[in-house]
Amino acid sequence: AQKRWANAPATADLLATAPLDPARIRTRFPPEPNGYLHIGHAKSICLNFGLARDYGGVCHLRFDDTNPEKEDQEYVDAIMDAVKWLGFDWTTHAKEHLYFASDYFELMFKFARSLISAGHAYVDQQSPEEMRNMRGTLTEPGKDSPWRDRPIVESERLFDAMRAGMHADGSMAVRARIDMRSPNINMRDPVIYRIRHAEHHRTGNKWCVYPMYAFAHPIEDALEGITHSICTLEFEDQRPFYDWTLSQLRDLGHLSAQLPQQYEFARLNMSYIVTSKRKLLQLVKDNHVEGWDDPRMPTLAGLRRRGYTASALRLFCERTGVSKSNSRIDYALLDQALREDQDPVARRSVAILKPLKLVITNFPADKVEPCHAPNNPHDESAGQRNFPFTRELWIEEEDFAEVPPPKYFRLFPGNSVRLKYGYIVTCTGCVKDETGRVIEVHAEYNPDTKSGTAGANSVKVKGTITWISTLSAIATEFRLYDRLFSEPFPDAGDRDFLTCLNPASKEIVHGWLEPGTLAEKGVLWQFERLGYFTPDLLDSSASAPVFNRTTTLKDTWAN
Ligand code: ATP
Ligand code: MG
Ligand code: MG
Image (cartoon, rainbow, N blue to C red; front, side, top):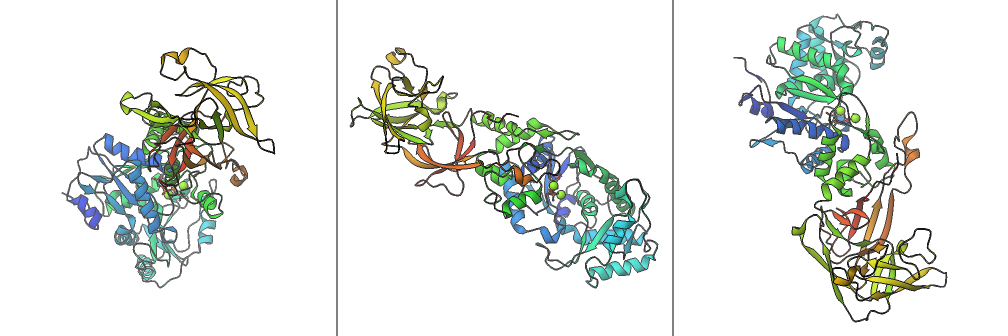
């Protein structure tokens, strides 16, 4: 029997001791640690980990860390954090399936050198620009490099010298020897190894030659026994080279006969966001947002801080499906998933975002009337919340109009409304400051109309408004987030995506919260009439609560 991973390093050795059941699928999520994960990555995580879970297989978390300049431990940590938060685990059957491409550098070097020895690769001393010029185009075949037929021993010697640090970046590279006239440009002698005198976040200065992604990736998959290597559609044209690399290495005796297969699916494209790492970085660097975890960012860190739950994101990924053709998913679907996820469980409460004082002039100043409401109207077992009704209340500024516009059913002089869970009140007037601004509204309550009592329905009113007693309201900062871009396709065509930033994507207001609304992190609340809110992960505290608006109760964006 062939030994599966004859020369595999420690991480892959673990697998060699446990022969794979061929019916068991093995997938991987292979991020490059050069940035924060975004919602597109969530799609790939749900797909790869989800397949393994559904078919009793295993999914590897593998860091594709073959590009030393752009990568960092900070990103490794943030990525592990995000995958766990999304609800996935790379430990299966008590074995941790966490891998680093950099653990395979020795093997990859050996494999590349073996390809050279077999005449399947050579060291090319053309400059990167010369290589580009010789590569041809879609309609024009490429031309052979003058170094293509150099003696094998010369390429072997030069590759060893490259590794020993004797040559400068870009002075030479190893190329697969395939076919410069192939109709597929990716098969025109692609570079497989290059020189980079750069420090790597894990291997330090041990290496100054690094494998190219297209060469490294199939090897990583094969060494780990991946069965389904799932990637996005752009890699379809790379599949012949993926297969070429693996079959050459198998024929040279480096890999087992059972090789991984690459499968492609459409990447997640979504309206009202950008997901290119370069553009996300620009938003951060140029201070259009306040960091990678700004609640307006489509990063998992940002979405989490905004209040999107892991289960809502998983529901969204499942809903939007896996497809072979590119399309754009409406951002509203994400909010819908959140509402569906949270409506059955989120505790209800009242917040007043833009407060105006309402004085119940016929209610005694020293009286406190207890009121109650369900914590969740869909779930009786969630119990009741209690709060007081007193003479002075906070209401929303927009719930009073001195001169009502047409079809306005809230407070205006002479009109009656229900104070939700309290009494029916009739507006008697208002008090203004010297600038003419309304600073206080006056009303009288009808003591027979308390919610939940026999008289509650004795008087019919058209409007119901929310309120909080000024005696026990919690002073709170609210951050009202909205979409970061005001155009559905911010980076369409050659438009500069920064020209469609939504100027109203963040508004800060200071208002009040119903007593008992805790600033416990990671918990979503539904504030009646307003939407879903959650305490800010960084800035909120029990003594100074800060709540982020995740989304409103209804989609207000027409497409
Ligand atoms: P870059 O921005 O540098 O091109 P990337 O978006 O490819 O990077 P990686 O870290 O290499 O990011 O991605 C890890 C995995 O996530 C890859 O398998 C990739 O196919 C997948 N992925 C990335 N973006 C999306 C997306 N929008 N939809 C679905 N999958 C994605
Ligand atoms: Mg990539
Ligand atoms: Mg990308």
